[in-house]
Image (cartoon, rainbow, N blue to C red; front, side):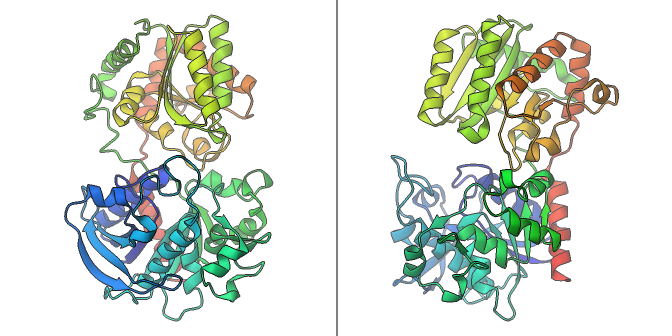
Length: 487
């Protein structure tokens, strides 16, 4: 059994903006089920405290960079037995809005101080200096918000081994030199081979340089971030760490208790590999809900996404427009929010094709399950995708993904080429170039194959029989912890 401190800025269901929150709940739970002693540290946001009932203060500590002591509160992660520690500093975290941005949009002006405090708390616990009488063997940090922690303990004696996971390299936690000085950080961190990045302070770089092992959330993304296209100026450093054997990709899992068509409470009719015909009733229910023609012949396309350029939303809107203009028998149900321009473009598309396109701006957990269960295909044309979870949810529900061949999408979706279909491994549709034409061709291939029910059904069965549970991923992480502890 290893003692693992898992540091994250968001954990489902207490605070979530994306996949980081899902991983930060599911992985610790899976690790504990495999006999590890896991504790999570995260900020005590106002939204977290509202959701939790039994919380106790366990210690109070003074951390560098802030003049008041801060408390550490203890509870358990909902629906688990994993210990959750909340860093309670009302000045930093007791506010409305998201974890990183204000209610009206725009980042919090003091994000550097807020997440330096989180990193310092993680470092104090890691060195058994927080009054908790517990020291981990492994400090596992996640994304830029905790990237400072490995840097703070790198030169300390008797420190735990450190793992740093990149969930999305595009967000690096860049701040000015003035912010670096204001945080009262050691001058030894400010140099080109430290946290300095083209005159700015990079929290992400702290995790990349000072941790014992870097992981990403899929094997393909681990390779991609070592290239100019995906490296954001850090590709040289990442390639160097890869060559040292210090960078690896471990595919995220998904929670098979939440995403299970046999038990899903949100869907119109539950179904399984042995009762596949029941899936059709979810399609009818989705069509009814959005006043779309209730026809089984139309290819119903689901899209659930943040409406941002990374997700290829512009490609999706343009390619769908072409198909609809050409009179193809397709329907689109879209759920998401993001950039105002994309939201407006989707509303325009819906206004032009009200009997073909349904759009819900925002996020709705129940509706996301209904779309996964009711759609025939799931559209995910991301320009880059470190892992992606929705394509794995889709496979679980027999909803064939249409994806760009990148990151975790490339690691989970096998294209419906004739060769792959004959080999019995095809489970979706892949395209290479991030262009409207390439996506349109993939959609047209899906339309053509959908008209061949026997082939389609066999691909659905292949999709549903994959195992993307956390079981495999948790075992891989345990092996990794074992490996770095024995280095």
